[in-house]
Image (tube, rainbow, N blue to C red):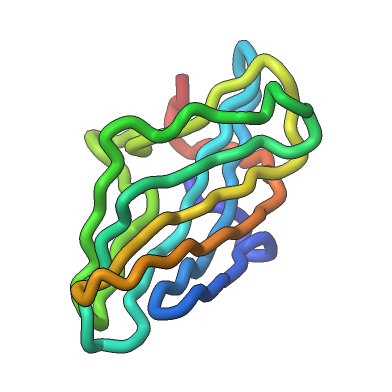
Amino acid sequence: MNPDSNWLQSFVAGPLELSDFAVILIESSGFRYIPTGRLRETTGTSRITVASLDLHLNGIGALGNVPPVPFFHMTIPAGGSVDLNPLVYGDYSFEVSSTTYATSLIISVHFFDDAGRAGMLTATAVASSQSSSVGYR
């Protein structure tokens, strides 16, 4: 299942780029929001460690505050890239579930480089319903 390419966006904060950012929306006994994209270190000189992710569902008030993604830690090699939300055994590694519909999702990626310089990349994407080519639960 791939997001509609019309919704893909790119964002940059210092040495970190989030490209092809989209949010897949699946309606099934509530709403499931799956952020997807690619994180890339842009300088080619320093590894980046993603320390945490903050997520917020827009348009539903305090209900949109999402607890931190548990045990999230990711390393991006200098000049390299990784999937934001990789498939693990045929399913995404994390998603946000809600009983209330939200129009979009904000993601904040907290990171630091080899020299200890910290940064934060924040991006917003509209939730886009997708049809699945596989039997999603």
